[in-house]
Length: 326
Image 1 (cartoon, rainbow, N blue to C red):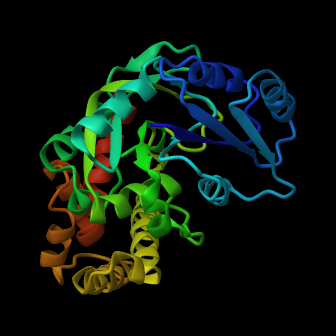
Image 2: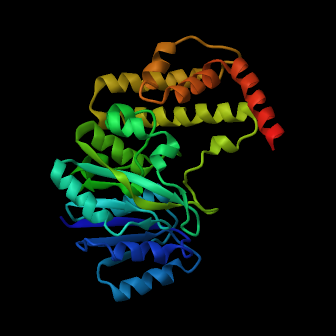
């Protein structure tokens, strides 16, 4: 199986060579590496040109104006010619047999999308967490469900671990452009899971590097917020964006039930911003949406979103204990 690997770059000079080398030195060599640079102003473009000159598998596109990460990946997805494709970040490291094992799993299971766990590392590639799934509480979702329903509310499939059959691009594209939270990898996984079959490899095949320049990483923005109202507003904003995107792309799902659920969910989160003390309206809808989430996560979200007066008190208690321990 020949594949296209899609890498979107932007000011990635610091770690770019390590990542490209980890791809070019894979045990499975049957691929093209398509790289689109989004107007970098560091040495990224010089580095890319060096690889183009020494390896014919590397194809580079230099954007004339900044597209942003989603449109940059969409540009690359439109260039796919081979049977399957993979996403790549510019600052990770792939295990040497990542492609080989992913392709083998896809062929053995006759699935449409394969993904794996990741190993979280620091800038120097020292291990921070052996399992990204365990760190984020994704193991139950992956091993018990691994389906559209469990992906519907929150994504747990990281783009850099995915191998996807190219036949699904017709349904995946165009990507949603207006969302700040529904990115290329989540949308791809969501659409394939709705109509196709997924399989996973439990071993980590990517060293997921965390550093100060990460745009998207293992840390949650909400964990850094010190103000309760700001945190709650973020929770609501993310979910409103989430379901608004689904509503705007209703035709893609080809499912009237999902279309109705999307609209009801958007209205639900829109109304939550007016709740000051407690809300018990549409509790059934909340638990339907959070059915596949870890119970402690779901319960915490229920309190924050629907019982802010109680959640605020608990938030200050937790913050006080944290400050005391420090």
